[in-house]
Length: 134
Image (tube, rainbow, N blue to C red; front, side):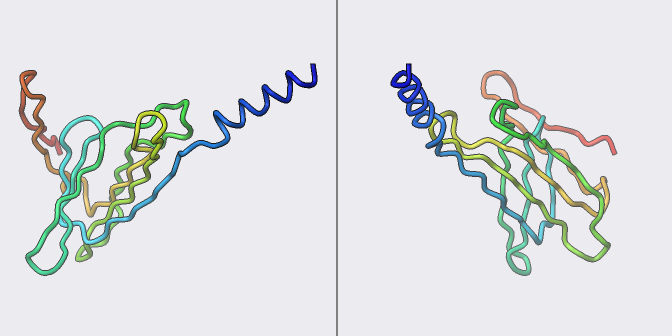
């Protein structure tokens, strides 16, 4: 009985205790524009320097509830006029299972009017764009 319990504990530790799950949090500042494509898919343009922008896209695949806390997407209108918007992204990289998924995304805007509709493409299943109804 003792030997069986020890083997069970060792197997459990090996399978679950040595998990390769890594939670990563990134903050993107100097956000000039925010696009909502569909569902939980967003992208932003970040101002690198005057007149130079970089696009960052955020995965729409939320982590499943069984993999821990899922915060979802939160849009906050709290950026003062004259300042650039910002985004906080929290992801889980679980390379042993399904790869990177989104735990939470906080998008900080001046006003909800700053959220623009973006395009989407599902190949032969259709394409289009999301229209913001602000």
